[in-house]
Image 1 (cartoon, rainbow, N blue to C red):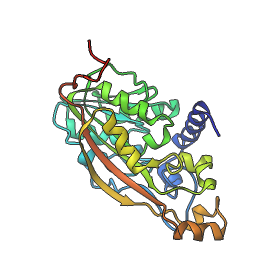
Image 2 (image 1 turned 60 degrees about the vertical axis):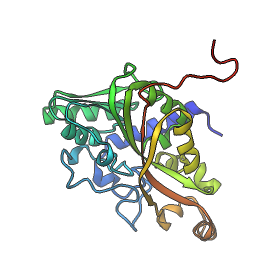
Image 3 (image 1 turned 45 degrees about the vertical axis):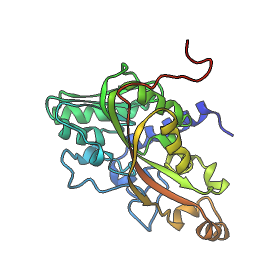
Image 4 (image 1 turned 45 degrees about the horizontal axis):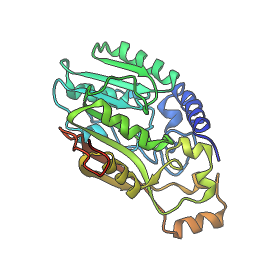
Length: 281
């Protein structure tokens, strides 16, 4: 069993490699992991081509949804993109918030930050910035963001509750998030669960859908809404790197489901008082 620090370092190294590639090199990957497939050009990602603000140079094919589509971003909003990569979702968010708003991208891979900043300079944007940091402890003050978005990132983080708690800290009272992520129903085969490349490919770090939603609720968020859900099919030629033919057949015939979901939730305008015995003076 790998430690939290080992998992983080492994993911950081993998995404540092991806940051130096372009989308054509990542196109046949499961969330950009490099586990190439001849069956499909993109296992996880949604099509951004017609989305306002889309910049192909910032799209490394790492997402599993389109959270900005559901994020209710308004002109002038402060938007934070968690795991911002080369800047794809941040630039789309910038098109929504406009010149009067601000977008902050956070990523813990230095090579991704460098690439995102280069893209920002090329585009001439003065209200988009990228900060290196851990999304469990964002380099952002409390009560800063009107909207937080994230695309296929929390599944890579071992301490998912830590991220959810920090999202709540950083959001303004009454503000909200829209996050796309990978979740499971049923259990992954151990060979996939333990595979480093599949972890960096957004699959083996995923948790059960119900547990994911309960984490959000237990941390005090309200109006939790499942905005979109789609089943993810991992092609056989990807699975064959980790499973035998017999194991693939068992996996296909089993009760495991891999899903991309987009979840919306709001931070309450006021925190409820704790009235449990011994909690309040």
